[in-house]
Image (cartoon, rainbow over all chains, first blue to last red; front, side, top):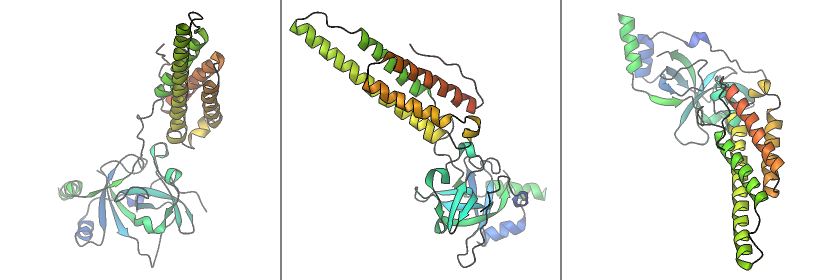
Length: 125
Length: 156
């Protein structure tokens, strides 16, 4: 177990490009717009993120990854958090803005099947 | 030109929301709620101590009993309200990270909650004053955690 990274992975930040747009159009990647401040060390409200859906046969999640997950208590609500710790197949998800984040400190560890995708690109607003 | 166009497309791209959320957004919390309740407890405690029947006749005793009961009920209710407001601040607003700055945070809240109970079980002005002082201490911790130094102002 290693403590999760607090600093954003700068390589995720990219400039808009045709290739990404194409991958979004054909459905190779999914995209979402960030709402809220709990990831504010890294993500600002209005930023666009892209992610690839988790392949359950080849899970490649590690501490420090930013993930999209279903909220464990609110139906149809997606949240974005960073993996802080991994305990077998359960994930401790935290917001980078720890003073203003509702995360695993409140709702506990998240099961793998609630994690939808791993953020692979961030486009600042 | 091309990059600007692409940026514009990405900014306007229809997208579902993903929540980097905080169930209790900062600003919703305020120790003022606990302060008002603690002030009410102190006020009712003082009134109870000062209360005496106007006479020994049945009407005076009945009036005294009625007023006494009402004052006790309000003191009970406001003590419980103060405890609830303090517990919300303790468990929802303050995060483990705050412990580094306020190492006595848990002890402060625990003792304040205990004082709420003490104010319920007795008519003790010193306990009610201790409760108000504890809420004032929490007021200072709360606002300093937000980088502010709001004045402590009481209603009474």
